[in-house]
Image 1: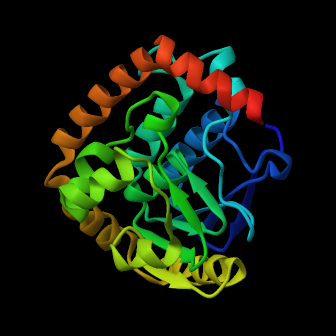
Image 2 (image 1 turned 180 degrees about the vertical axis):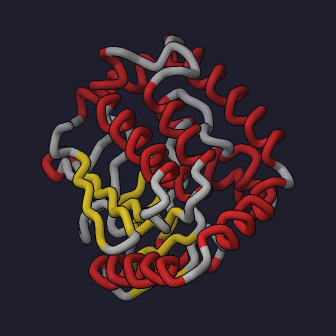
Length: 249
């Protein structure tokens, strides 16, 4: 395992920290695999009561590493990004996110599947899929219209507009907005440690009940989005947009 994903145990808490500061914590195939495997191990480990996913106190993640994506784009639903999505979707333990700075693309959509999300007020969240010739992923085309209504979801998905941590909390995407990145990380860890004092069976059954209502529909949407996303990656429109992004960065 490389140090791009740092793992730390604190009592019954597993902390997974994105640690690629020179690339704004942009996610590679290897990082997706490491995150997926860590979530699966945590889910199977009775000593783990909760998982925290965080970046640094200045940056959560800039989303996918575009160069890595172009070099070997995901070709099917067994590819590393989808392995990670399934692992997070299937995790029975509470997953808490701590977000500061940029949270782009999957950096925002993964939050829709965490149980608790603590953000800095000035965090910058964005899902610029259309701007890159792509389409929404990780169930965002289903979850966001239900959560925000069609008009607001269209602003975020059809236009790819960004929003702040304060807005994320007001809209129900985040649990609470804190004054700083340090405060968001501290709050996420403080809350996650509370699960060490609660009955794990009761917590897991409650999470299962909360997630079960739309579970099959959500799985179907994620698969449909994933199939369309992989198709879009090979389209001239997306190749031009992604190549243009690479040239600018």
